[in-house]
Image 1 (cartoon, rainbow, N blue to C red):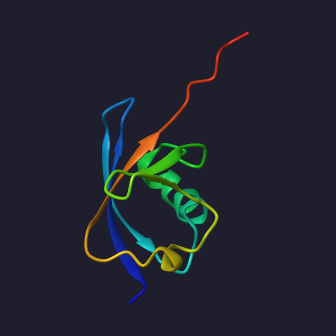
Image 2: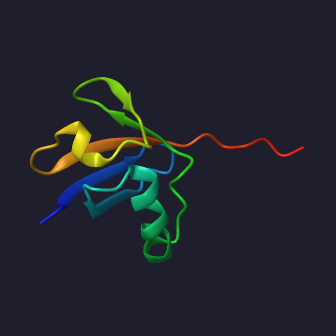
Image 3: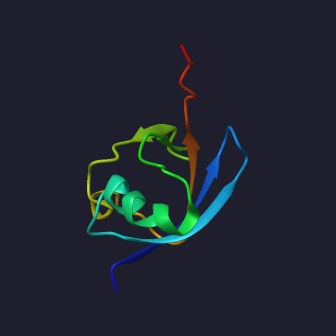
Length: 83
């Protein structure tokens, strides 16, 4: 009942993830539960809504965004330089 379907596209790796997340939780909380299944830690990415042209807050519960339907968002990950 509290499901929202997403398609995330990682703009760096070009990978696409189609997932169902719990709207009661934040992106970070959902990503932490998703990591064992996809093998990727998404908690450090920036989440961009290309339709609204804004980056989204990863700590807010998903229900605060009032998403409708199947949502497409882009993920931006920034590679850390090795020293």
